[in-house]
Amino acid sequence: MKVTIHKLFDYLLETTAADPPECFIGFSLARSPRLGDFLEALDPGLSLDWNGKSFFGLPALRQRVIDQAGLQGRCSPDDVLITAGAAEANYLLFRQLLSAGDEVITEAPGWPQVGVMARAIGTTLREVPRRETDRWRLDPAAVAAAVTPRTKMIFLTNPNNPTGTLIPAEDLHAIARIADQHGLWLVVDEVYAGLEWDGPRAPSIAGLTPRSITTGSVSKALGLQGLRTGWIIAHDRGVLRDAMILRENASEIMNTLGEHIAEIALRPDRLAMALATTRSESRATLEKLDRFVGAEQRLSWQRPEAGLIGLARLDRIDSETLARRLLAAPYRTFLLPGSAYGLPNHIRLGVGGGPETRLDEGLARLSALLKGWED
Ligand SMILES: Cc1ncc(COP(=O)(O)O)c(C=O)c1O
Image 1 (cartoon, rainbow, N blue to C red):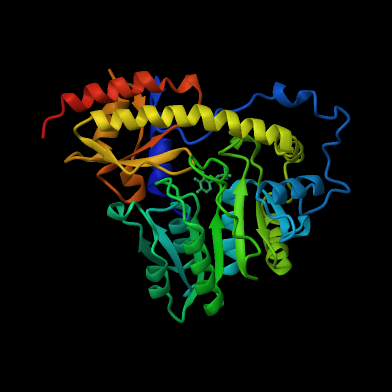
Image 2 (spheres, rainbow, N blue to C red; image 1 turned 30 degrees about the vertical axis):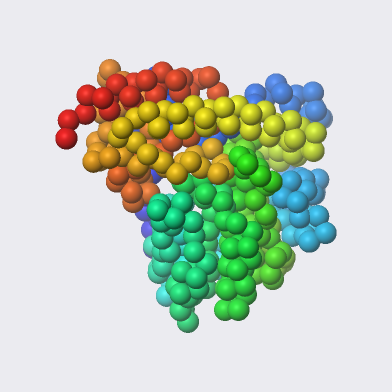
C-alpha cells in the first residue's frame, strides 16, 4: 500500500513553506560541524565511483560503528549494513521482516515512522503506553502482555523520541527475554544514543539475542544528518542481506563521501571530543529549559534523561494552536506540537543546535505568548 504522510512531517512541510522562523525551540540535532572540519583528513584522490566497493558499506566505517556502540567482542563489522540514515535502516527492516497481517509492538509516544510503515505494509500496531506519571517509563510487563500469536516484532527507541527517557538495562534485558521467548525481532532505534545526561551510553541491543537489531546514525549526537549515513547492526546475516537487496532497488549503494566523512567523525578521539562538547553545551541548555519550564505556570515536564529532546505538558492549551500562533508574526518561532506524537497537550522542547537557533529569544517569545493566553 502507498506510504502516507505522518503528522510530524506534515507539520514540518507546512512550516518550511511559510516565512522562515527567526527562532527555534526544540532543535533535535547537535550543532552541526562544517565540511571544512573534515577536509584535512579526507583523501583528495578518493574515487567517487562504486566499483570495488562493498555493498554492505565501507569496512573501516563498519568497524567504527561497532566501536561507538561498545559492541566489540559481541558483534563484528560483518554484522553491519550501512544505510542512508536510521530512517532507511528502519524502513528496510520493516519492509523485509514484516508482512500484511503481522503485529508489531511499539511504544506510545514513539517515533512516527513506525505507524506509517505499519500502515503501508498492512501490519497491526500494538502500542504500549509510556505514562507521563511514571516518568514515561516503558513497562516490560505491558510489553509482554501485548504479545499475541501474530506478533513478529517489537520496535522501540532508546533513548526515546520524543520523551528523552532511557530504558534501564534491566528492563532492556527483560524485553529482550520476552522477544526471545516468543521468537520476535527486537529492533531498537538508538539514533539518540551517546548523549545520556547522567550516565554511560545506553547499552546497545544488537547481538544480545539472535534476533536483537540496532539501528542508528551519525545524524543526532554528531549533528551530521546531511551525510545520510546510518546503519543496521544484526547478527543475522540473512537480515542484512535482505535489507541490502531492498536498498539495491532504491538507492543501490551508499553515499561514498558520506561514509568517509562519517568514518572520520567516528574516530575515537574525534568522537570523544564531539560528544564532550555537545554534552556540556546541551547540559547547560537543559538547565536553562528546566528553569524556564519551572517558571512558566502553564508548563511542566519530566526532564529528559538523554538525547536532545523532551516533552513538556501544556496546561489547558492545544499544542497545535499554540505552535501556529508562535510561528506567526510577531513571534516567528518554531516549535513542534505534541499532536505530531498524538499528544495534543504537549510540546517538544530540545537542547540541540547552536546559537543560530536563538533559543533564548525563542523562549522569551513563547513566554510572552503564554502570558497573554486566554482560556
Ligand atoms: C528515532 C529516530 N529515528 C530515526 C530518525 C531518522 O534519522 P536519520 O537522519 O538517521 O535517518 C530520527 C530523526 O529524527 C529519529 O528521531
